[in-house]
Amino acid sequence: MRAVIAERPGGPEVLRYVEDLPDPVPGAGRVRIAVEYAAITFIDTRRRAGRSPGPPVEFPVVLGNGVGGVVDRIGDDVDDDWLGARVVSTTGGGGGYADRALANVTDAHRVPDRLSLADATAVLADGRTAIGLCEAAAIRPRETVVVTAAAGGVGGILVQLATASGARVIGLAGSPAKLAEIRDQGATAIDYRATGWVEELAAGAPNGVDVVFDGVGGAITDQLFRSVREGGRYLQHGAAGGSWGTIDAGVASRRHVTVIPLAEIGAGPGEMAAFTARALSLAADGGIRARIGQTFPLSEADRAHTAIEARTTIGKTLLLT
Image 1: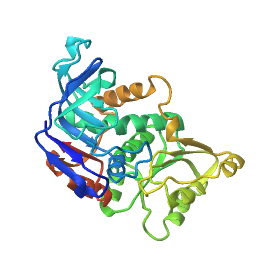
Image 2: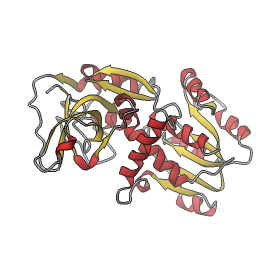
Image 3: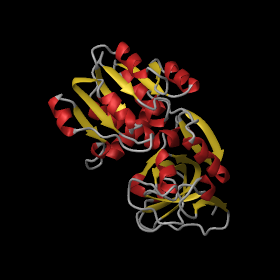
Image 4: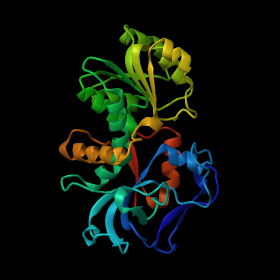
């Protein structure tokens, strides 16, 4: 098996491409996927660096929690009709940066015939997250919605879903190319790295903002929270800025602002699987589009991580096996 191993915590240089690992064998309730595409998320870069917000990572490790490919082997108790199926699946948190990956059969989703495997892999994690966030936000027509990192994987789909809900969408990003991407989606674009962006947002939303999708965190959270009108909703789903933003629960309560953390998204039984199925169906029907901004060979995962951390990527980044 070919794979990329992070030998120890550190920068992208710790990622090592190897070609001689034993092929994994699926046990009960598991399938093996001949991987064609492996999705990269920002959290992968944090796990590689040893700064994961979740449980500590045990090194050496094969990163990657989302893959697309064809089922080439199944556990003894898995139905034979999974063999040869085109699927996308999460992998339980790791093992995706490889040409063979194991997954629970309950996590595998068949890819609609009219949807490419690349697009399905790109929409797997980002699409279900965006759908869950939008459902929790309960966006109403003519509301003003702010999306941070709006040219990223989750952010780009949030822009599309919020626009389709009839909202007026303002996307924040930090480069001319990303601002152009936001405008191409039909949203207003603001450069949050420019001096005066807070004033520009206030001028564009003089009555306040109804909904904020915050995938950046850090200092931007405090600035954006002040823009939310009474009765608004603030959804935190990422920390691309380096840390999660802090919101005073007492202040939020006094202002009647509902703060919805990422942990509440898809927390119910079967919810995340349902969000994934909806994302794949919407993508197949053209209701959402996952922007694949860049691809890298599996052997160049270090370059992909470098680009993501430099924040030069647009949309989704995929590894090609």
